[in-house]
Length: 440
Image (cartoon, one colour):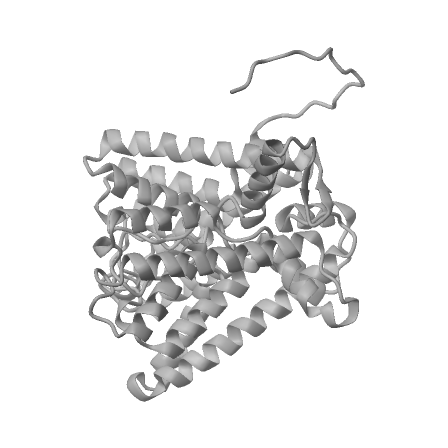
């Protein structure tokens, strides 16, 4: 197929696949591994996919297996995957003073999930500025914090890598032995910096754009209100439940203030960063189920996060409450939500649930592990989270390939993949007679 003939969803899919392929080639070279030997193709492909899809699930330890060159490749893949292919295409076009045509603006709109193409280039400019600014501030604070114990060079590298990994909601770390951030559960600076980067990266660039311009406009769109309220509610609810459930269990060795800090961080991380400061295997089953629910919801549209998105989650519940109240329309904040948006939210949720069920079913065939562990990894992969019960490194080749497919579906979204694969005919001006089906 000619590139010029591809539709915007198809271009996004092809673009992500091309970056993953390039990353896997670079990671399979001898220069990318610490031992100077070429990594096997599946390991390189899995790592490139988890980086570009900003998931964080790994089959080899990032801090010990990969060389500095390999870690730089992973960091660049995280940055490209998090901000999106079109962000960097826009950056190069602006630097080279190239004109951005209407078709490119349509693709930018599709990538960002924006409502229209109007002002889309300016939004992308702010996207890049905000992203690099947040990452730079986070990297500076982390570097200064680690400087006394690591030395300048290592502290600088760790600061840059983890700031980019956190803002892009990747959750990949360099601390070795699959420890993630478990050694920093009581470190206030690390917890607050990483969690802040996760939250800002997961809000969505349209919301950040509106917050930045709030001083001039003095108003927020319905979308931004829904995202901010839902995000805050889920973080608070998750913190309270984890704190109460694990107070005398997984958090028992921590002081009360540190228990609250750990509970807060573990409530933020499933939104979809993948960092953890406590061992997830030590949590009660209900707490693990809660984390799966948070991973399923994920972040917000147009962000670096995955999941079905906060706005989708809220629209579904608003529609349910409207039905229970006998209302024809789904209403929130004295605004009516279009039926098409409700249908789209329902489609996203049902497709995601179907993918989770199918992948859990298939992995269970080829890997003899408990249902909860497999389900946790699949939800984490589809939500592009990266939190793990240490199952991914133990999966066989079939299991790893299925997780790769799940991560790719989660990053681009089942709807986008569906649009790219299904040929949609132009709708004729025909409306069929109404039919009746008994529901419930």
